[in-house]
Image (cartoon, rainbow, N blue to C red; front, side):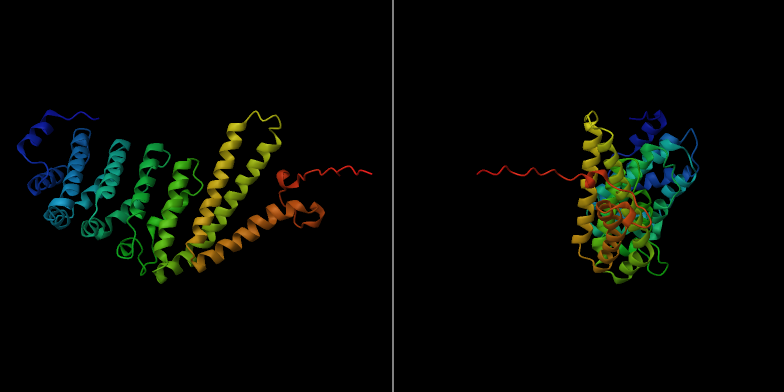
Length: 323
């Protein structure tokens, strides 16, 4: 995908076995000699990070000593340092892509502990990326989703800090609940569901979610669903000749996704969360949007948006009577 300089190929040739502790040590040497990203070493650093990732994935299955060395030399700090230099989207995209591959392919929990120690992953999560770049956004949210799939009772303390009441993986993800890209919105739903499932066995985290994030998140979520329903309703009203079936089909599919997501949250059966969610659904969606559309506008104070779909009632024709 990217051209390698002749010097880089020459260095690679010095190591006969690229999947080895010795080669990781050499990669560490390369990092220490290139702590500042420049136009001349950008490709070299990207390839070095890729090579380190390959060695770590190999070490996860074959040689735990590579993780010992990775942790001993605090090599994740080099990744973070490169990211913080704002060295352009090329390095940023490649780093996020590589981290995603790394965490997707690590299978042993001990290896995961090594990677999550020192809090560098949380620092990457809260890094100020340029989310106007679609590729960066895609790799970032994919990275968060991959991390959420690693959540369990043993790993959650690497992400949720009960002493500082901080849970970056969750709070950063829910900022994108109404992102224009459906792929991002779907990833956010997956992340939140994974978080909610783990919270059942962690009272501190459960209280944090309930007290700090549940009300604003569920309030925004229900408002977003309501806005989507109104958009769907307008599409039906303005498309009487059914010329825009594609858009209508997409809106209906999205609405069904919302309902499935709500059902997934409720079936986790977390009493605290269900209480907050059902309260918002009842008072911010079902009553004001659906129920109030069935009664006269003069009976509703203050006035609420009314759904045309709900107002349409079927006409029943009386069957003829026969003598």
